[in-house]
Image (cartoon, rainbow, N blue to C red; front, side):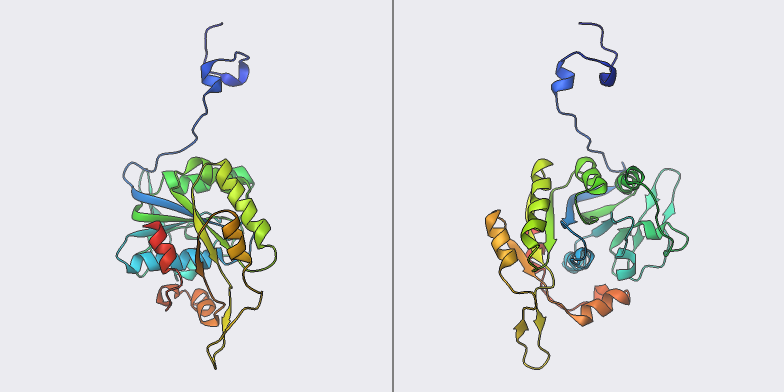
Length: 271
């Protein structure tokens, strides 16, 4: 065997270093404190993942925990708007400080770095993945729970998060349409391939409550998410309603004022 020059790409030897799986996990900033990290994921877009992330963060914060949100949806960030955040992030010589919401939730998103939040982010996948990684390695978080609001699907950015951030688990968000089985299957398979635990499922847009009689109306039918959860041996943590009041709070940047306990069981599962 020739002398090793540590350049595996140019080497044809079948040595122990080549056979040993390499870890791509990154350390957070040395001044940061992060107790637990959970990804909030979906197999497709449009299921209200950011809505779930925001409410889950508020639910945990109301229990007295320090909470942060890493907005990994670089091309479609919505977390700062949900919390009414207008301030821009500031940095030190070797770090970035997260922006804090009215109730104390720490947020890092591309929108708190852009001069104009409406500017489009026209970057290729590796660049976007690098930015998300910096939100983990360069930000001085001080939280008990860091929630990572993932982009939809199983592409470059999701892979980058799974590989570089030491996730304690993921919460899969879905909706009750017929596609739910396929959507959950994609997310579950990716988590299994990356050896990341799945905490459970949250079904968003589960029902509409009649304002007159209070009856729950299941616009898209019911039982599909529960069947998917049973198939994979996962708990169904919550069913969240379609509520115009919630949508208005998101649009007005007042999500911290929501009134509801839909995600109490989901929060219990993270603690």
